[in-house]
Structure formats: C-alpha cells, structure tokens
Length: 79
Image 1 (cartoon, rainbow, N blue to C red):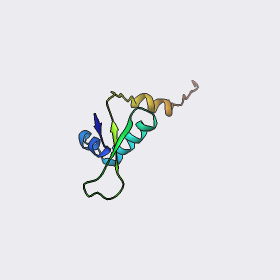
Image 2 (image 1 turned 90 degrees about the vertical axis):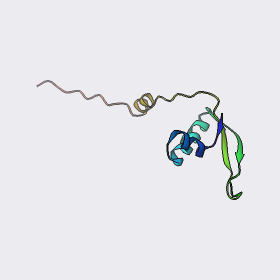
Image 3 (image 1 turned 60 degrees about the vertical axis):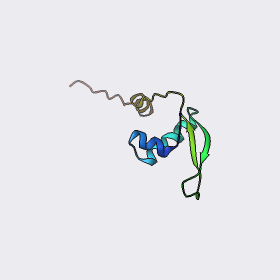
Image 4 (image 1 turned 30 degrees about the vertical axis):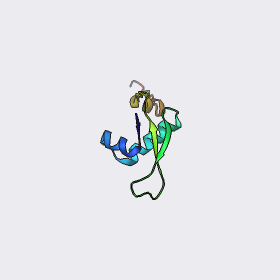
C-alpha cells in the first residue's frame, strides 16, 4: 500500500503533523521507504512524499517509554 502523510492522517483520524512525524520516524528507522513524490492539486510548492507501507508494523509504546524513561527505584528505610 502506498500513501502520503496526509492520507495516513485521514485514515487514522490523527492530525497531519502527528502523521508526518510518525512517517519521518519510521523512514529514519528503515521501516518505510519513499517510493515517489506527488504534486499537489495546485501544482505549486514542495512535492509530497509517497511512502510504501506494505510491511505490517507494530509499535509497543509502553515498552518504548519504559526503556527511554526507566522508573527510579526508591528505597525506604523501615522506621
């Protein structure tokens, strides 16, 4: 499946900046790739990247957050 960040935002019901950031993150990680560029309907401005999303991707945000921000262990002394 191929889609742009705008199409992804509409499909998932999220804002465009969030979708674009997600696609950039996945591209940097090598999980998606740019397969082309699409011209806007007006034909002006920067072309939109078209991403290949043919590989299923599962993100475990709980694991990512816990590894990035480990919970500090607080030891209390019994009184």
